[in-house]
Image (cartoon, rainbow, N blue to C red; front, side, top):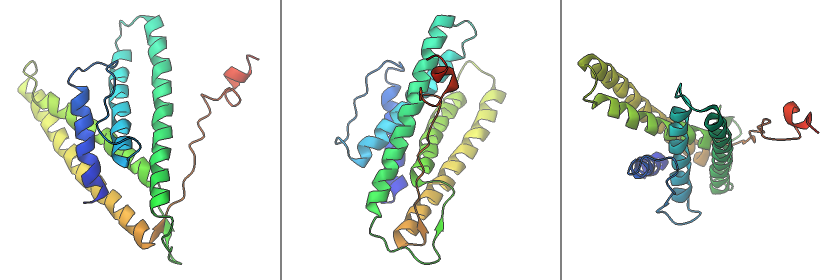
Length: 201
């Protein structure tokens, strides 16, 4: 089984589990063994799924400003959790391939494996919600047809991205590529680096 053959069904399970209640405050019930890679993939997608719906809610033009600010803070926290989890998944790959003998002509990829998996998780969400649009009864046939065409593109993108991730991991395992992970170093949440925050002292 390739890594994306493992990942994609876990993302689908997370999305389906969330939509049993379709509520951003639903507690997560991660079905996988604690600290396993499956556990982290499910958690990663759950964070993405909740944030997807928070982003929908905050775009309500009639939202109460106080509620909107609270949601913005929650989205900021979610983004940080998402980044931390991607870096944790990259740590899993670094450990897995730590003993690989890197070839002299090995090259580095434009992004780490976990950031590619991050895109795959979000792509699963796009596919779920675009498929919903193709099944709506309250819209025109033209709307459903347009969304069906978009869904076809997203499914093709999922296939291509999955293949690219699996190829990247195969290349790392064979020493043809090597991993080099940079921390994201987000500055806006850090009171020592955000001038609006350190300027308040």
